[in-house]
Length: 241
Ligand code: SF4
Image 1 (tube, helix red, strand yellow):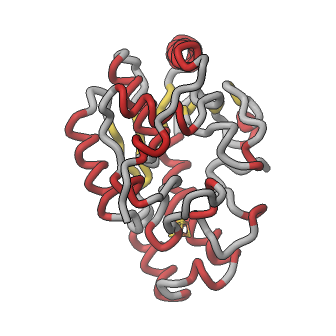
Image 2 (cartoon, rainbow, N blue to C red):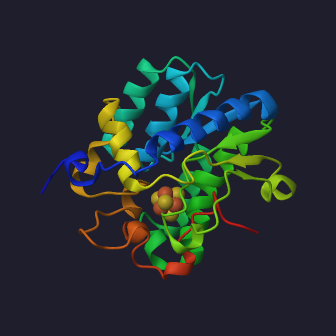
């Protein structure tokens, strides 16, 4: 089944315009105070909104994408279109081929379903190591985290300094106050290119083996690591230590 998420979800909050200007202010501040700064994009709905805002306003915030080697073909196609159309650079980081081959050889293609430890080990090789590479030399990174997304994310500050000590970067969450309705309203108003997986009820997009569509009414992040408990579901990119 496929249905436009715009029809289903686009519904701006009463203070939508204020949220957009708050976001723009924050991106401006990010450049002025925290450069070099880069945007982490999974090419999900929130991230395409941020990349669009960056390009529209010519902010000096290059984008990076972690190409884990396990993305959906729809996501890879959107990555290519984004690279072709973005004014700011869209940098792609990939895991070490040797490590991926060794991991699959030892644990098999389906390792992530066998245990949380193996799932985390896979994320370590395919996501966290390339992430560390992407963040090298950066003072801050911009993410699409929103307060509404899940319980673990209930406390999403606009500027998060808690990881500065552990990971070295300030995290900027310019959509922290946006609702899912705001995100789709923006996509609709600005005709932003988005991942067609959203048309098949994928709200949160990750690697193909670890993402499934959710049915209407199911929790937002239910489609990620659905075989695991709620508490374990952050992938480590945004986990607190
Ligand atoms: S999301 Fe799944 S496939 Fe992707 S790196 Fe993590 S465990 Fe591996």
